[in-house]
Image (tube, rainbow, N blue to C red; front, side):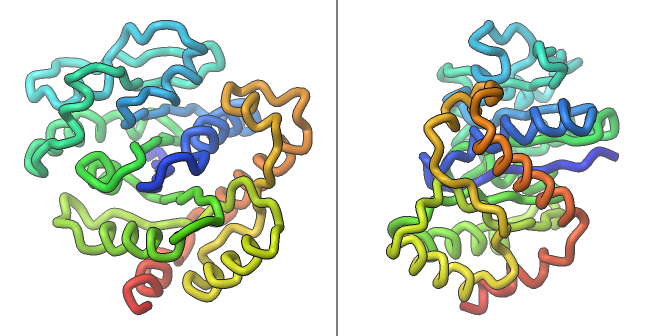
Length: 259
């Protein structure tokens, strides 16, 4: 069976899609893994990145909610990453309000595919709702990208309480940890990082992604001229893989609920 890794955070603008797509590139190019990318976000940013703005002409994510779907047609990309992409259309937007019972259809369609791949990477929309519940039902490991600002700790507690208490399709979920993005080492960020480490002990990846102008190129898989960004991204991705499997599931979720 393939390993399913989800990138999720209900806050937008934290670099979630950039890290998810770059992780897929890393698995394919550096590890020669067979990778399927599942874009659950109707903004379709990950789909546009992986297809380099070519049209999606195979099965789109929102079509998985059709109980009569006969066969999933996988979209191939130029870098060899298979894709079930998303589209900006009313049908895709409507799936964000899907009743829990209807999540059985995409789950039923997707589960047979998992054994065909080494890794399945899922990019969730920046919200708490059915798509996150769907990803949770499939996921082995969860990565939560964050930026150190605002009410970060409370936001993370809300996210993980949702993961723990939402009515379950399955109990299969094992969070990996928190990935710090756009770290600038200011006094404010250092203070927030200390609070985060105290609230979520052992949950934060040691490798931080600092702010780089070249990270915008990284979001398209073009980081040949961004060696500092590339080095940090790949160090983070290796750390993610080293933690699989991990025992963080009970300790991490438990630490959130006990705070």
